[in-house]
Length: 220
Image (cartoon, rainbow, N blue to C red):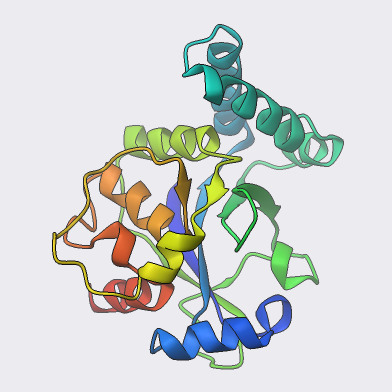
């Protein structure tokens, strides 16, 4: 099982003027990125069960318990998800933070005709591709499971609009402490996830844009 990052160009779903401006302003090709977890139905359902039971028993902060329960019921008790889990040996989850929307997750497949639900091409350099995927660093099995758990626990958290706007400005304080946050923007969440398992520690999560993250991964 492994972790990857998908990078989206300002095309198709992201083809509006705002995303083209973001791409230009952050000096690169991409306006959005997402954490991609390559996993199995067994690992997903085991993790979901543990989180769901813990939330029901009040083991999270009170304000988080209902959010976690509702997000699990919305995303993993859904008939389409359960059908996919029952008919697949492997699954690919993409954790998404879009402007103005709470964090969500969707299942990607290799056969979908819709790029939003299709597994991106790995390391594709074609500038006309809407989305490409870069393989993340190799992580230990327990780190992969911790990342899956953490990502599911954070579902439903708000998009950090102020953080996203300020991310392009230099950081004078170095990397931020690794901690759960009340809200995230897309590349901040991805960097936070990898820092939790010992990677990307030189990157300040709050000042990493999709393009600066892509450049870091290409040069690493």
